Length: 398
Image (cartoon, rainbow, N blue to C red):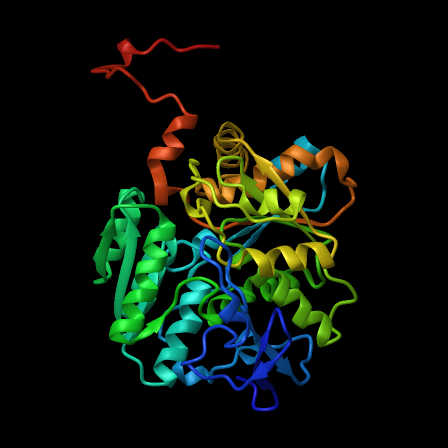
């Protein structure tokens, strides 16, 4: 943390400011209006006040001193320049931000990293959260590096690889016989009853603040802000984190304009898209191959939608078939194997690319590694159905 920076909480609904305190998660006034089966009211953002030079360290723009961060190398993920895709699609400035190369192979490490540091700063030993899989395995891995106890509520339908990963890191895992939304509610009930710090997305302000670092890195890697950035969206916390990073850069007078953010949802989990088109959030059962963005109630939905609406963003949907096809196309043309949620962002780009200027600077955010859910990836390829004993068993084609 830069000693010249000052940080406070600010309510994204009413604008009230508060001192940063681990006991404060959502705005006390606005949260009183909370309605069940609706996104969170009174989501808190971290506001910064100060100055920064173009060569800033992203940790200096976070509200926890660097000595509290655990010894695990989060961030600094590569920004790919996929030459084959650029040539075939006609976009000479297309980039892929590969956050699948974080320590636990997902962007969620950025949030876990800051939450872990915040807990350490305030001497809180247990961190609780609900997750569809990535946030849970992420918090478990980062918590292992920090020596913290992690208690995870995970839907029983979460991919086996993510369950195994969390258990390998030593987390206490409670498998929930229900969807992510039920796991979320149980995690809040647990932390209210037994204490600890709840990391669940949007409910803990540090989750959004940690995720903003992906935008800070993109700026540093490009030397400027992109024109467009495609972000797969479930709860809306990554989307808001991306906006927060670019908003901070604009506030610090390091960029002139905030990129146009394109939120991409799966057709089977499209609550934000439906609110974007109708103005209302209506919960309904969800199902999609992209488990990381599969939520009935997007907890950060109100906050995310407000930013989309006020900053010229857009929400689109893609089918599961398009997601699986995009995952395969990205893998075989660039060598980047991303999970279905990351592929959803690429599928979104493919679906509207004809509407975009060919000269535009475009970033697609790949949020997790494809090995997180190899079963889903298997839907896009033909597995060999026979074995061989010698080269004579091979029929070589043209």
